[in-house]
Amino acid sequence: MAARLKDVAALAGVSVRTVSNVVSNAAAVAPDTRARVLAAVAELGYRPNLAARNLRQGRTGLIGVVVPEIHSPYFGALAGLLIDAARERGWTVLLERTGGRADLERRLLDGSEGHQVDGMIISPWSTSPSRLSSIAGGLPLVVLGELEPDGDIDHVALDNVAAARDATRHLVAGGRRRIAAIGLQPGLGHGTAELRAEGFRQALREAGMSPVAEMEVSDLHRAEGARALRALLDGPRPVDGVFCFSDELALGALRVALERGIEVPGDLALVGFDDIEDGRFATPSLTTIAPDREQIAERAVQCLTERVLGRFEAMPGRRIVVPHRVLARESTPPVPSPA
Image 1 (cartoon, helix red, strand yellow):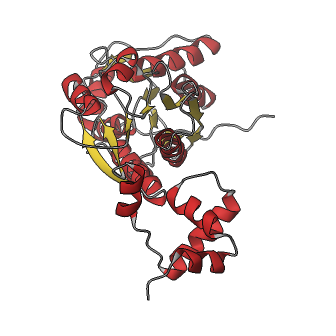
Image 2 (tube, one colour; image 1 turned 120 degrees about the horizontal axis):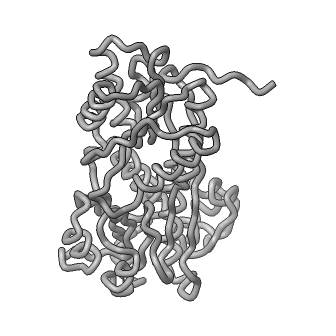
């Protein structure tokens, strides 16, 4: 016989209403109580009738997750975490990619693609913050990335300036004095590269240094990292440290260093950004900036759930900044401990 709400309540030692609140996200529940209820749900194999619940509440039970790329290891991993966080709250995710195209972002936001969703988590590359709300027409939104929206749209982001500053400080602390950056993208309007460039410059100014070069790329993938490092190495100024604005760029650069017989980190130190899995298994393993992707996903889905359920209709948009850390690995020399 299928488990019922009251069976879950009895096993968890809570009321039926508390179980209902947990499985439907209808009200806030203390974390330890929520964990106890979810454990009982798993043990009994309880499955709520989500279709009936959504019909009663006038919702579809679907949320959209819209990212620029799926083949990118960073966005692929983030999409998986968003799906996991949504599933825990009873949502089904409709995943879309835009390639950063303004027309696709607009059509997904305004519903002209035909998808009926209760809300959307989107990482826009082309749609201006001021237009997001007007295009979406009241659809609950949470925005990821650097384009900070207006009004009542929640925004979950990393402090890219601080993260890039920390990456560059790590190179300086490791004794590097001729440092370049790879990753400027003047053709894109989403701001990520500009913010990381600003953090890079700030750290060098602190150290009384100037950049050797700031290499422009068309995207943040491996081939561009390889091309940019070749141009750096063939240029007039020697370089002993490179901050790449993504791990994929850094992995492409690492391959070129190997081809040229350049020792990493002895001759050239490399720092990436994103903490993708490939970087952990590269030879040498890649020093990187690790954003807290789990928290990005958790906070974004929680914010969207609260908006969809109408708990914060009158609240201004919230800006949530998630933490990051430098993961020092083999592609940079050990940093001396403070005396």
